[in-house]
Length: 187
Image (cartoon, rainbow, N blue to C red; front, top):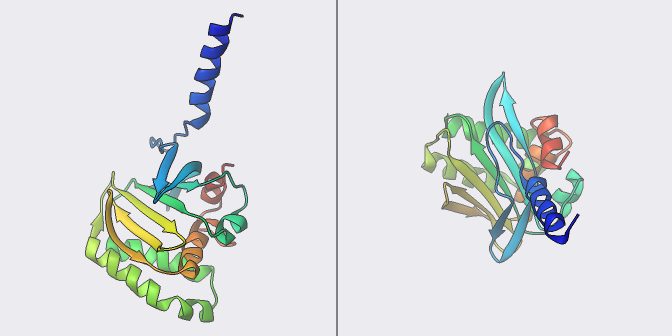
């Protein structure tokens, strides 16, 4: 095989390694949060009662296979939710709140109550997310978690404890869906 053929084969293989498609959604392979370049760690489908709700994608500075490690690390990261269904703010916040509560004690919930209230207010202001919308949850250790819908920042919720609570929705010991957790961790 000549050098040109080898180079072409290598280029084609590298493109295929990055492409992940889940339920018709192909998350971008790289994003930036602040000045940090993040790489797609994995993606998965959230379903409930046989309905496709969203495709979630996790972006990290480096590949990670451990949910506990992702939760513990104080680094910039992104959770992107590609909506496959229209949801009003009550249903969306209710699902987040329920999943956070499943992974925390009463005392831990009391400690993050102000941040949960702020999240509820952000979702109330949005009113509804539609099929095709993109929700991003961007974490920067110096700022907190910025919630955006279709590229428009809706607000930032301070605190590492809140962000860890949010990550536990998908990566905790009681994730919303085991196969979604596995997909986000590249499995």
